[in-house]
Image 1 (cartoon, rainbow, N blue to C red):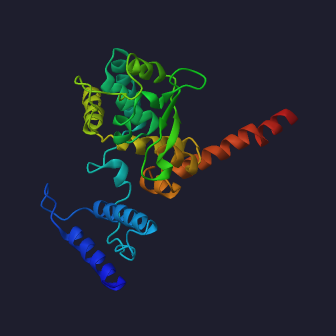
Image 2: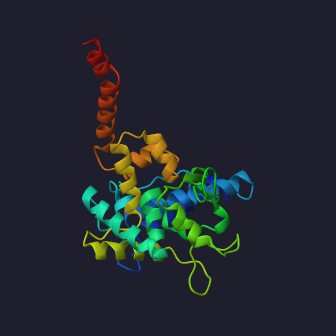
Image 3: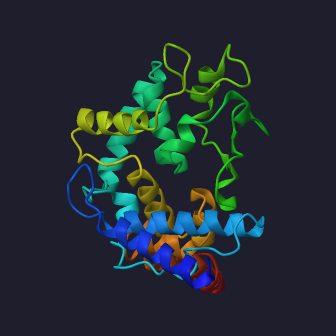
Length: 275
């Protein structure tokens, strides 16, 4: 089979995927869905070519069709996100539940405060919770398909005792969060807990992944550099973080804030001292 035939087959498969009705909606897949699958397939087949298992990548020349929805990755199908007051109320409720042993609330807090994916939360093991200066202050994510996803996160002080409590009496290879049968949860468990707290507080129902967008937005508005936010979320390119996760205008707001801090801490203070 020639290379042109292989590439043609890749284009045909993508076209079939793009136009195939979804089993759930009976409508064609959204642009984000088929473009993400195309990107994953390209990466996997490229990996096969590097190992000489394939002569050519059938999807290397296939281009994604239709534009992605802005911020859809972080906001999900509902498009809902939490405002600052709503996020604060959600956080207070989650901490109250976690303090009385609600591990679902603790897991949901990982999504909000560390921007972790649902799959990353449920796959964490006891051995991944480490300490540097204090027990439970580091959380390792050693396994991820894209290299940037392999990262070490600093755990906020409010979460440290909650996570330490989760690992008490467990073997190093046990999962951080487990069912009563001792098995790891599915990632839907994180989604359920995020929405459960939304319902308790009476705020818009958001997806677990929307918490990643919330973290990106709030940190960008506080002036944190885009590449540092990308590292926290495990993104390879900060453009993904700022274009698909952070709210429009968050980066500009953060830049203005940094400018004001610079003036207040530098030029303005010098002017005051001169007087």
